[in-house]
Amino acid sequence: MDFVWQHADALTAVLTLLLALGFCRQWLLRYKPPMRRLALFALVLGPSWVALRMGTHLLANLYQAVERVLAHSFEYNFEFYSLMLMGVVFMGLSLRMLQQAQLLSQGRSRASRQFCHAAIALVALSAPTFPLTPVGLLPTLACAVAGLGLTFLYKPVRQLA
Image (cartoon, rainbow, N blue to C red; front, side, top):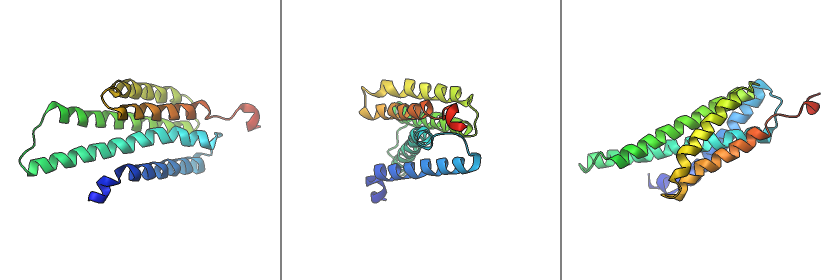
């Protein structure tokens, strides 16, 4: 188990790339959208990174809480509550962004509005944590990558003919 905790960052990075590539490949083959492939990858990469990181964040905090419960030293406090709540909210927002990215790959351009709303909410919640911990800026950067993907997602009309 020590190997997993020591290499969690590298493992989540590899899993994020594989997840994003898998989603892009599946959506491109299934829906055949008139989109730029690299832009779709960037659109999926940001929210999938946040979802995977928040999933590991939740698992790590839950694992440590169970260890403390077994050692009879667990104390339910605001720090534990806020860490778990932050993980659930960030993961929910990133999964919402992934859902909207799938709708965008189906050609439903109206999903971009909901995608942007979820991204703005994620940035509004994560950016203020930057003074407390530099890691708080990473979900904001992931949303910036996804926003770049959204900007260049659709091919111009002249390229479709």
